[in-house]
Image 1 (cartoon, helix red, strand yellow):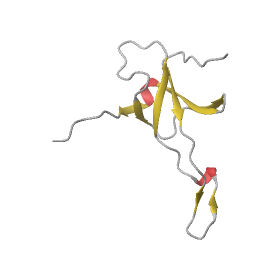
Image 2: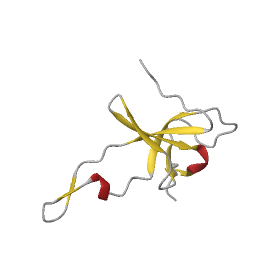
Image 3: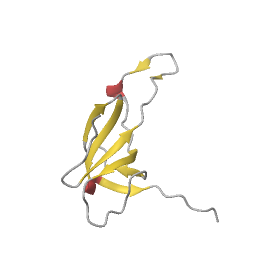
Image 4: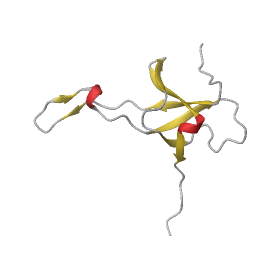
Length: 94
């Protein structure tokens, strides 16, 4: 079995597959015309001193960062740790 392990202050994010989209008239929108998602789940971190995110966190990252790869039928994005802009945290309603 193979596993991705990030190095050099990189983070691996799991990208969710989006369903095919259609216009109101029934035309399919190609992947090249779709806007890429900027939210993803962290699945692995390289050795980073005092990271602010951990495996399992959902993060918001820079729009054109990283390299997409596919492994075992899943899509991943390898980005630099510094390209993470924010993480999603659950809070209680006031």
